[in-house]
Image (cartoon, rainbow, N blue to C red; front, side):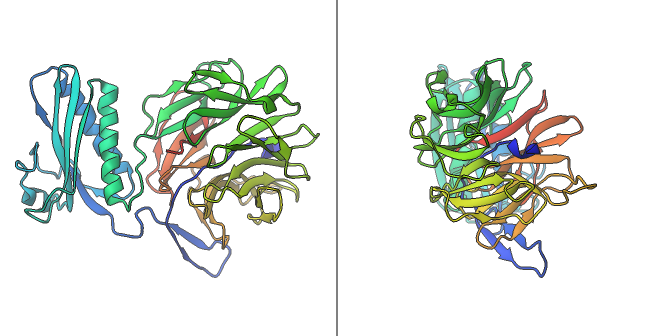
Length: 447
């Protein structure tokens, strides 16, 4: 079955898009990241330090850099460079001179600013967002945060303020600054499940099994991780409770055959996975407890199921039933099967949150004498129009959507090393997140 047994699922998100038909096979799918509007020109002033506590300066530096990075990564703003912004640090609406921020060279439409203090072990932040071009207007957003003073909390508070701004200016879609990315890393000598912040910070191992663990998938409520792991009885689906900090029972993972690529339904009640317990790989579905497991495909060579997060009634998956692996869609009971890709070698589907698109890895040139290469593609389900998001930069695989539908995380192999990258859903603004060891199979949290 070659690489078809590289099992991988899909996760939800909301993404606006527009279709522009062309006269040939690659119809152009334009994935919008800001609801079809012009990007908002936004400035983020360095926050004003208040008080003499020695923690104030270092925590303010972390807060300022994190806030600017979060807003820059949002995909909906045209950020004012720090070099073009006024050097003022207004700590309140009474201190800001909006004309300085709206004038050339900053030319900001909106400005975020505020004050930060550390006192008695507490980090206190006041943040405002104002219309830079309308003097005398009320603040668009006002926030206050009071948390224990630490470097981690300075980042967290910056994430929260950034997400509040993104929610207000980004069409009512929640930001992703507090989301997590789960992945596989071999940097400790074995393949374990790891986690990091959305921007690559705070990378650390979750499992310590000393074996091979693959395909982590976080539950919709962020309480459990389902993954495949190699044990004494072969490949099994394992379940790790983040609340308890340990593995918990998942009986269906121990029922013979090779069991891989778990995928959660959006309500968290059901898990789909691939199992070869009947002698060939089929798509199976079970309750989240592992009970009531049953097959929904009878053909064999079916792997990597992912749920439609909007409806919960469809699964996308990979099948080799017609030869080389292709992407298919079916109803959750196995009926109404539709082939989505038209050739080559297509794997690793991931379903965007609103249910209208799939991201997947596709080698369109795959064939005898021409191995081609994998890139990330995005396909509109209804029309089968598609967009190629990556272009001849390594071997790209395992896309997973962010919960805001504006970003995709994926793995990229260059030479003999594989690392995790993110990009906007149209393929722009690519950033590498991992550098140590080999890091694969990323999965973006649901929220």
